[in-house]
Image (tube, rainbow, N blue to C red; front, side, top):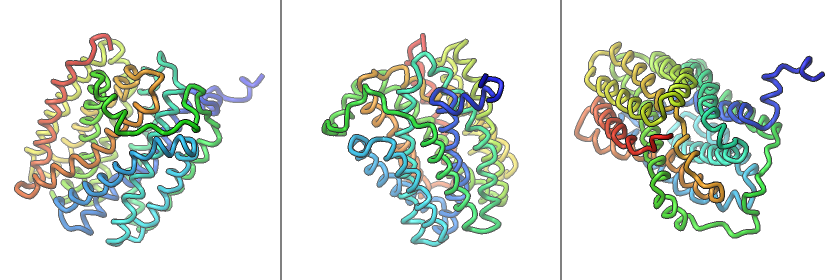
Amino acid sequence: MRSLHVPVWLDAVSHAGVTSLAALAAVSTFHRALLVTVLPLLAHRLLGDAQRVSVFYFLVCLATVAGSLALPWLIRTFRRRFVLSFGALAAPAGMALLATDGWWGLILGMPVYVFANTCVEICLSLYVLEHVQRREIGRFEPMRIFMAAGVWLIGPWLGVQLSGIATWLVYAVAGTGSLAMLGYFWFLRLSDHPAVPVMKQPPPNPLRYFPRYFRQPRLRLAWVLAFGRSCWWTSFFVYGPILVVTSGLDANASGAIVSLGMGALFMARFWGSVGRRWGLRRMLIGGYAATGAVTIAVGLAAGLPWAIAVLLVAAAFAAGAVDGAGNTPFLRAVHPYERPEMTTVFVTYRDAAQFVPPGIFSALLRAFELPAVFLVLGGSMFLLAWTARYLPRRL
């Protein structure tokens, strides 16, 4: 019988389902994990200071948010499998520009790279909604995060090491990872659900379904909580390495610190079990509050390099409790008949979290030093802990 020749785990990742989709999502993060520390350090080296880096990130992400509004039309015109494929191929193109290690390569490459990631993430989210049953969502999210943990644990450190050997090497490896994800995606042969509108229908106007999304309280709350969580990680990835380097440690240390912080993802399944036992509402309230407290401590530790390093890792582990819930509040609230439109709106939290923190902190850093970023960021986490009280108690 096949069970005697094919291991259970290999069979599970060879067919569309919870395990294979979680694995696909993990593989899709490989190139991002490699570059998550390299890109902020590259921008800081070319631009000169954290305030200019903030302005640059703000402008890049603002442009990609505008581009992402065209994705519903692209998906209905070309089908999502081809939009995802486009993103997987465009990402290496952006990396090739970044590999030039120059001013123009940074300006041209970053928008291409960020938009490519948005294409892949939106399409993967739609496949998850169609192929993961509602009762399995609580199991899927912790599994997805757990599988990605190994990638994120070594990726930031490895990226810095590869860039130290040769500037182009890290981009070559990252581009290969994006192509490998595309190959695995086509191997799974994921199909579009028949309930999804056929592409002959005219694409909906984004300005029409944005208001419909935010008129629904549970969807609105899910967006705010996901946005706040993503803002924290965006700031951790951008300002964490810069704070480490400017405090006196080297680039290798910044990569190691980010990698150690991402070890928190290994606890995703533990936090998933905590959420099922005690409720996601309680877990999120506690997680946001703990993240806020440790993040404020990072800002107060200015001038103590190793204290900053330890506290950054501790803050990431506190944020792991928030990540343990994943996007479950949205997945449990969205109506099946409007999944494509509502998913397109929901995932804008990622784009918004890419440009809102740099926009705010670019103004903040005109008057204050870099540690102020973490004081403000920690305070915002306490605000989100208060907001999480409005989640349904049964969640």
